[in-house]
Amino acid sequence: MNPPIAAIILWFLVPALGLAIIFASVVRWAGLSPRGLGWCAGLVLLSLALVATPLSGMPLARWLVGVVDHWSVPSMALLTSACVQQFFGIELLQRKDRQVAWLFGALAGFLLYPLALGLGPFDPYSLGWHFGMLFASVAALASVFILRGNRFGVVLVLAIAAWHLRAVESGNYWDCLVDPFYFLVSVGALGLWAWRACAKWSRGLG
Amino acid sequence: MGLMSTTRRRLVWIALALALHLAPAIRDGWHSGGAPRVEFAVRVAAPLLPTGEPPLCREEFVLSQATTPFAHVSSLCELGDGRLAAVWCGGSREGARDVAVWWATRGPLANDQWSDPRPIVTRESAAQETFRFVRKLGNPLLVADKDDHLILVYVSVAVGGWSGSSLNIKQSPDGGRTWSPSQRLGLSPFFNVSELVKNNAQPLTDGRWAVPIYHEALGKFPEVLWLQPGPGRAEAVKSRAFGGRNAFQPALVALAPQRALLICRAAGSVPEICITRTTDAGRHWTAPRSSGLPNPNSGLDALRLGDGRLLLVFNDSTVSRENLRFALSSDEGVTWRRARTLAEEPGAEFSYPFLLQTRDGLVHVTYTWKRRNIRHVTFNLAWLDSQADGKNP
Image 1 (cartoon, rainbow over the protein chains, first blue to last red):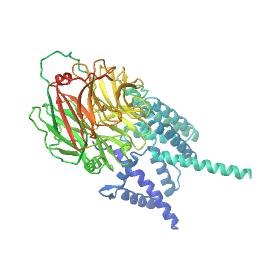
Image 2: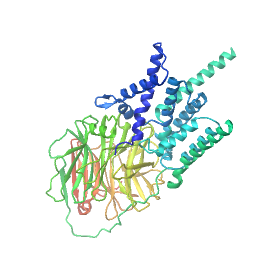
Image 3: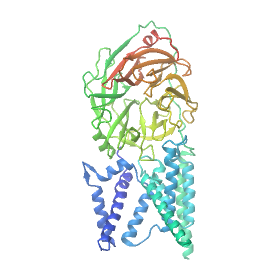
Image 4: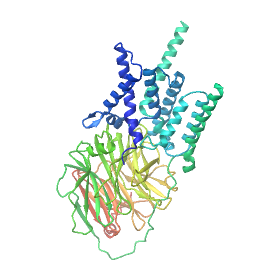
């Protein structure tokens, strides 16, 4: 009856990766260079230990998931990519992949959340329980991204694999594709990108 | 050579993307969202014959002494041995951290008493079992599946008020002696919030249950939870009856394998009970229509009696919860006739009724009595029919 093991792994791993990136930034700010397997293992393990630390009898990760409910696969992929870049200098997801990820997160959230929360008669969340339009659309999107060499397509393949492995408790495919945290960060990242583009354009005019 | 290798790699990923996305089609076929294809399991109505049975009505409190200062939102079911089981929320006050889901049983004989209540879900046990922070507990619903298998659906909240609610279930294989750990149901994509339950479930012919639930975030509207209980994890999907902000907390009444009503509490500016219908077992619902009966934004319940009539219990007012009244419909909810008054006292609150007809034909109703106790009333149809005030809506 307990949550699926794949879901529990995501609950702990996603915040741990986020914390590891923050720790690495602090270390860099302190004048050190957190590169290599040693730093990676050390900081990720430290983060895992922190999110597993009981606070009033319950690990921090479980407090967090009590609020956010689930973590999506793109969240996991973006954090993993940031970690690998931080510690090994390898870009698993390149700039263009990340831009598509932000665009996908923002569009999916804007399409899903208002309608699912009751703005209008149609509930797009119901498309995620069984095969139908959502599955076919994401299959097509993933194929186009992969064909064009965009690695976010591979992230979408991992998302459907996670759905098969029941990595989200609900069993709804939407929950593998997007979570509120990923949506908000996507909107923020796109906003920042747009602001920078505008600033660059106005400098060009000047 | 490198280009060939890149192309081959991409084709492999595309094949994987297509295979993994399309594989569920083999099992499920194409779904356009909404309710699954099901049929309601409906008893054949037996016409009411005069039996000469004397009117019977018995009233009692479920809590013989004040176990908790606050008691609210009860639910009933009949166990395999004919006993009744009840669950409700009890604690120091509504929404308090000490509110638990309580359980009690009662034998079938007239002089049997309700057992001493015991908590079956606390905030702490819910948090432990669902692996999450739980701030408070809310509405429980008890459903008797076959062979003394029970299903408890209950509300929990991590953050915010009742619009931050999520649903959880526990199952008992032995009529409530032991319970499985709670399972959180993921029914909403945004922090899994705003799904609540109050009224009874309807059995489906394939062993699943249709549970009337409701949403109250940006909208307030009724939904149906299609629940497949099981010894491991229960499977649940949901579908929306209609959108808007005017009607929620539905009672689901199945009329035939494909036909059913959702009778809803008023939430908007029109204080009237409204009704929506399906003729394809929940795949589509009509626009909600007024029943002609008032509702002060308060809980109600309804069921289809063994003789085919519909019985509704509701607060017969547009502004207060000072009374609870029955209404009957002989034409599947098109028109209603007021019947007996269940409770009435100026300034008091009687609310959140729950109806059940047991195998012996008796009808049971429990309701919140002044937010301090749960009142249980047992009656037969002779009592129900012996006094109708004739005041049509």
